[in-house]
Amino acid sequence: MGTLYLVRHGQASFGADDYDQLSERGQAQAVRLGQYWRERGIKFDAVYSGTLKRHQQTLAGIAQGLSQELGNSSLQSRPGLNEYDSEALLRAIHPAPLPKPDTPELYRHHFRLLCDALAQWMGGTISPEGMPDWENFSGGVHQVLEEIRHAHSGQNVLLVSSGGPISTAVGQVLGTSPEVTIALNMRLRNIAVSEFSINPKRLMLQTFNTLNHLDTDEHRSWITSA
Image 1 (tube, one colour):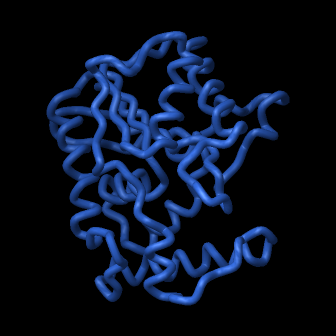
Image 2 (tube, rainbow, N blue to C red):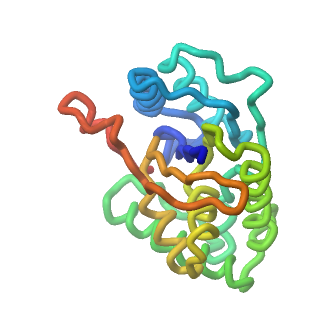
């Protein structure tokens, strides 16, 4: 059997005007993951990613750490791996502007609202402006998983995306409820790795949200979530 490595992007710029940009720490996290895989001789037969800047920057950092080019003909960029629009979700249930979540209390409030908005979107209660409905969003993730299952059985595949698509993928493989999928989403850490085994019949979850590459005295302080 092959292995699909699903990687959430490195730390982005939460609270800044442009979230879709890796922070300095996020860049270092991506390079470190590539180094970890290079030390263990892991190579990839195919690479998939979303089209957002933070996905591409994470992929570039992993390639730097691996000391190999990942942007060749094996790279498949898929909009179906892009994250939902959290700002549109929040506006759909809270039209008034929210303060920047720059305190622990505001941070918790932000994510409580986001979880509520996600639940309403998944249930079809709200239709955030500029976003697909939940059925189309999850369908885009399913389409990529099916492509990988059919085309890459027995191979190693790297997939770089965001918390929403990765938790959706895990939820589809496990058959979880929307509430559990949201909980999985909220627990995914930056640059965390989840693994599916690949065979022609199905994908199976092997690991979730692991950070073995940061489990050293030097790197534990690099663990982030937003």
